Image (cartoon, rainbow, N blue to C red; front, side, top):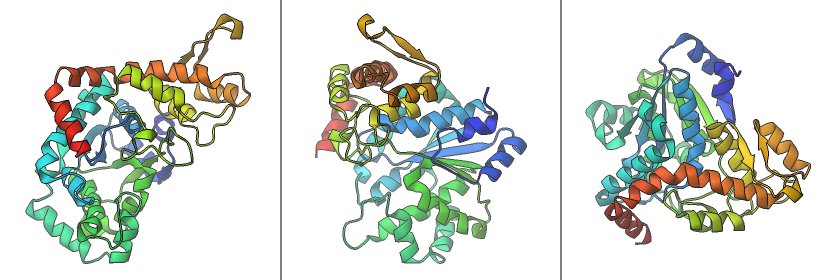
Length: 338
């Protein structure tokens, strides 16, 4: 059985720092952790990578917050208008509740707009802004914010607000994608100047694009992802066409889905196969699965079938919610198409 530290560190791209994380787990029962996401584009299944980590931290006794960073969604090149903030925040929350199921009941949902305009927060923002150069702010935001040409002031404010969220959510452990690293590392330099601890950070990997080519799964490119609200038929079609080179784990979105999403969620994976190909095979660990795949004991199409069935099952509650609330889904889809 894994130790609390091993569970917290599992599948992470980077921990900052391992010693600080260990100290928090050992000395702070009921530690606070958070993960933030800006409600901009369509919610796709790669979000399950950091969300799985939240479930693990809750199992370790932590108290978790999911920040629906609605102001951030506007600061990022106005991807979400003020008029759409409420709708998209509701959409993201229901997607997360659906894909996490009962585990979401242990997490608190907070919108940034409920506290990011308060006087103390704004004054801390001014303090941080007076310390950070435009060069550092731009570098911090570069992997997260869509910058085209000269950076807008809003795009430079984006990382500063995110740094402050760590303080105002009283966070001991922050979870984010590895693309968030520059922002949070800038925060480690400045949080103590506004009276808060540096904390520990768990950076999770990004899921490779389903079409291959070395890119990441992106909400802005429909060919790279599967939306939580996609139909089972659509999921099956997309996975069948996905990049999945035989015996190769490098930038493989299908085997990465097994490692970072299905195994942490399910604890095992059944690969259905015809009897003439050896019959069904079950894996209890990702290491055993990857070894078999690299040695070409498993065919990519068999893996794709297993991944399709598992994803359909995981995404089903969210799909059922929106099927029973077609007006919300229609408004959401229209907002993305506009």
